[in-house]
Length: 85
Image (cartoon, rainbow, N blue to C red; front, side, top):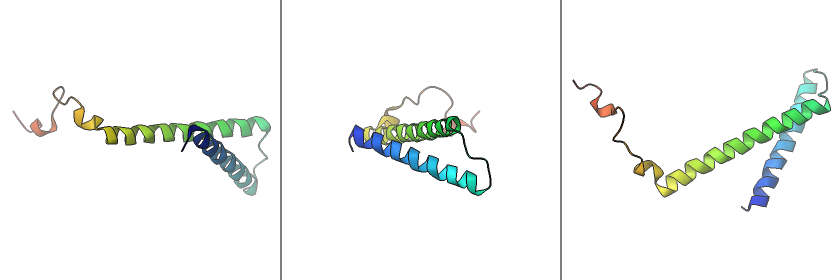
């Protein structure tokens, strides 16, 4: 996917989620959200989606490029020596 497609998908997810949550909120007899509430909800959803995508992209990249295997494990406590002297 290109960056434009990813941005479009993130905006689409944000819009659908915001509309769905607004309908759910009014369905349980809550007051309709004002414009500022909808903007805050949209920004929160967009930030959460962006953060999740970014962290998952880093996890997949780390796995593909072997960053975990190259990590220095000489410093700090070693779990194998936990029961040692």
